[in-house]
Length: 131
View 1: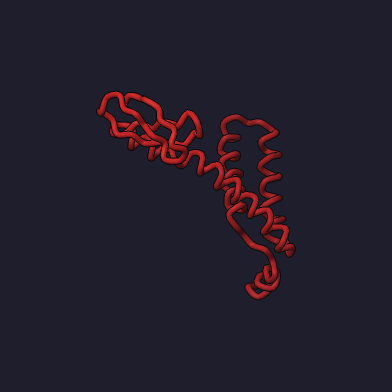
View 2 (view 1 turned 135 degrees about the horizontal axis):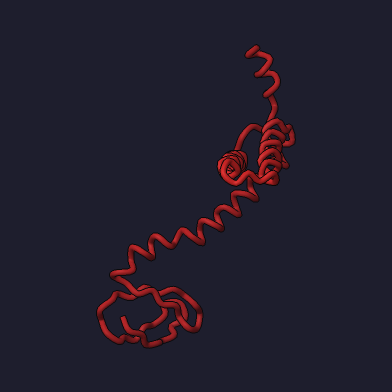
């Protein structure tokens, strides 16, 4: 039996980050559907799991790798947008974060120094803000 399973899976794409994400999304939809009982969610969960299995048993490595690369690019863009929030919260008590009015560069200024003249390190534009 084990040899038959190994022969079936030989040369197949298998799982990747997109498949694991889809599996988690399908499980979350199943839990939500336990409470809401919406027939459309049943269809979405079924379609999700069918897509996962089609990807896992596919022999088209190039197509599945391209899909995974697009997913990873979207995920990194999403995480980079929200990735700076914890650092900003930690620095909130000791620093002000200003943007240069000319080039929009972020500039970190220590708090508690009163009104100061800030020079942008990128474009050398000077502006006055309270620290």
